[in-house]
Amino acid sequence: MAVSYLQISPEVASSIRLVMTDVDGTLTSDGRSFNAEVSQAIRQLKRESILVGLISGRNMQRLESLASELAVNGPLIGENGGVAKLKAGGEPVDLGYSRQPAVDAFQKLKRLFPDAVEDTEYNPARLVDYVIRVNGVSVTELSRHLEGAQLLDSGYMLHLLPQGVSKGRTLMRLLDRIAGGLSPEQVMVFGDSPTDVSLFQLFPHSVLIPNPVLSAEDDILRKAARYESALPSGEGFAQVVFHFLKVRHNSAVKK
Image (tube, rainbow, N blue to C red; front, top):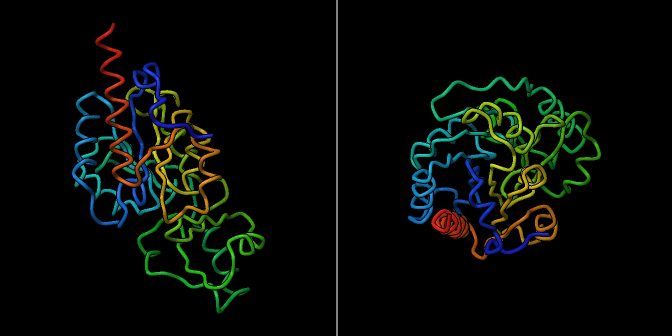
C-alpha cells in the first residue's frame, strides 16, 4: 500500500540514477501545458547526474517532441511499452513486437460490437498499440473476447496491445543498456493510471501521482505503488522530486 512520499529514505534517495515518468495525468493535466516546477524539477535531476526519461501511451513522434521541449536526457518508451529509444533522436530499440494481435483484436471487437467500437485518428502514427473508442460496453466485457491481445484503459483512451507488452516489462528490458547497466532499485518511476501498474509492480521505488479523473482506480493503484504524492499532476511530480533530492543532498552532507 502506498505511503507518503515523505517516507522516502536517505538510502533510497541516494540510490536513484534514473527517473522514468508517465506524461498525461502525471506531468500534465491537460495534455498540452507543463508548469514551471516540472521543468525545474527535471533540471535539478539532471544537475544531480540523474537521467530523466518519459514512458507513455503517446506515440514516439509526440514523445520526441516532448523530450525536446522538456530537455530530458533518458530513454523514451511510447505506446504503453510497444516502442522504445534509449534517448531522444536515437535509433528505435528492436523489441520484437508485432502490431498484428492488436489489429486482429480490433477487427474482432468491431464485428462483435459494430455500433459500440470505433477506430480513431491516432492509429496511423502507431506501430504496436491500437487506440479505440467504445460506447456502451465495459472494458471487462470487451476483454472477455480477446485472444493474444489485451485492452488497457488509461483514463483518456482505450489501448489494444499484444499480450505481454507493458511499460514495466519494456523498461526492464532496457536497463542493461542504460548508463552501463542499471538495477530496478536504481530507478524511480512515476505514474497515475492503470497503464502504469506494471511499473509499480516491477520497480520498488514507484510513485503514484493521484489523478482526480481516475479516482475510481485509487485502491488498485495505491496497492501497487510504494509512495504517493500529496499533490496531483505536475505539481505532485515536482513535489516528490524536490523532496527526494533534498533528502539525497542532506544525506551526502552528513557523510
